[in-house]
Image (cartoon, rainbow, N blue to C red; front, top):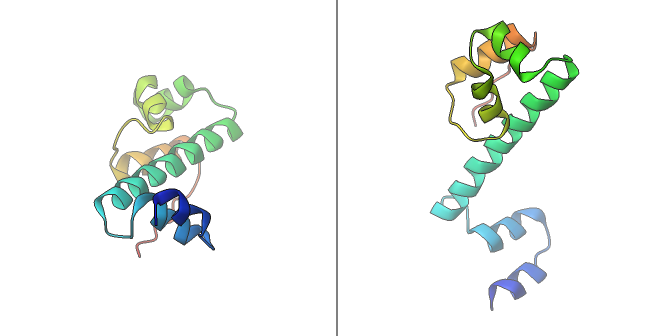
Length: 102
């Protein structure tokens, strides 16, 4: 069965991910999952900043970083430490971070 046929025969989203990116634990799937998490974090940050009616520059100034760093985070272009995200959300945007590991 070729890839397109596998995709057409999927019954749910998990099967679609398996067909497109391989099973959980494969290198291609792990890469996809990592990029998906970066995307979620970047979109959440953008949304929170816009809700706070702040520019990237205003947020950067508030947390003591550069606008470029906020831009890179919002575009999923950098791998940041949890402490940096904590500072941006908690101090910069007044949001709480809840961490789930599982």
